[in-house]
Amino acid sequence: MARSAAERGLAGAEVARQLGLSPAAWRARLSGRVRPLTSELVRVGQLLGLSADELMAAEVGPGGPDLELLTERDRSVYRASAALDGGDELAGLEDVRAFVHSVLSGPWWQRWGSGVTEVGLDPAPGLGEGAPAWHEPRLGQAGVAHVLHLPPWSRRPVTILHELAHVAAQPILWAKPHGPQWARLWVDLVASVMGRPAARRLRAALGGEGIGLAGPSRVAAELARGRAELERLLGMEGGEG
Image (cartoon, rainbow, N blue to C red; front, side, top):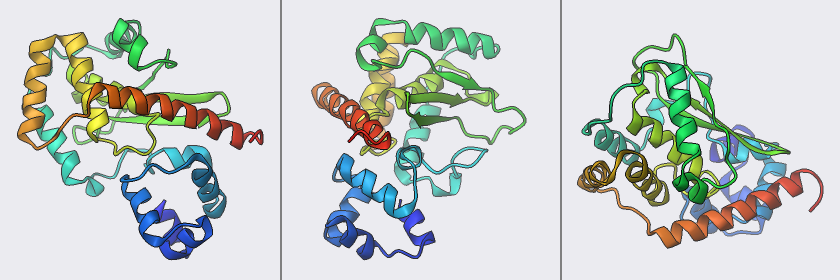
């Protein structure tokens, strides 16, 4: 949002003024320290000419996120993941598809990924070993569709579960992509699919990088609130609110 405002010649103070916020309050929303209200998201979209889809999704190009914009927290998460035995590499896209389907059909997903029954897969062909794996949410009037972009190097269980944890965490629009809510979901999903010893190793690796986990009750409350916010946002986009 900050980049979009700058491209339109709007200073942060001006955006804050039009939202009825102080500059400090606007910065708190941009940083993720404060959850933006649905009405604020809609107003920002109107000011900047952004759709709800653009407001909720990271600005990425066809090759995925800009690796030069990774935060130190992002890099810490990737280091923790690289230090683990990620499980046996899946042989091909159909094996990945079957693995994802088994996760979405399992009891953990029924509780934490409620409402998401299908996740699309993009094999990310021709992007090379340096291509990132990433999750792309696409918001439309019918709801949110999810696509995982998975280059060949990423087709191991712990990395696929990393991306599926982003799918599960997506309703928490105000959370940082690799924040404590997402970390909790990733560790618990690994426990459900790969077993508790693997989850303990993952949690220890994350802890060694200074990455903490939110409590399950906090995550459950924020997911419920986020789903309600998304429903309101969809209603407003459709002219119903």
